[in-house]
Length: 133
Image (cartoon, rainbow, N blue to C red):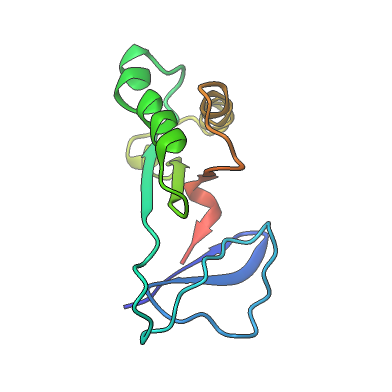
């Protein structure tokens, strides 16, 4: 089974668990992970994914329960581990939201992830709404 993701600003596809087209160009702004051939005996690269809803100012529970652990994962992950941290803004729409407030909280959540120590050079930090299938 193949799952495909794309960036809203760039329609290049990324396949997880399947083969990538050989002609797919690599650019740092694209989501891309090279997939070894099915006959290769190398282990798949580990992937860690987690997300947080943009619901306002994070509290101590957010920090101790998730954010602190994300930073620890980032700093201790084995080389080659893909770290994906998402601001799940679409998931926040399961209850009525004020659109302008949600946009503000979304930006604040991103700033918070940077402030607690997540490094975009080591981890992929993205908004859920920027991913389409």
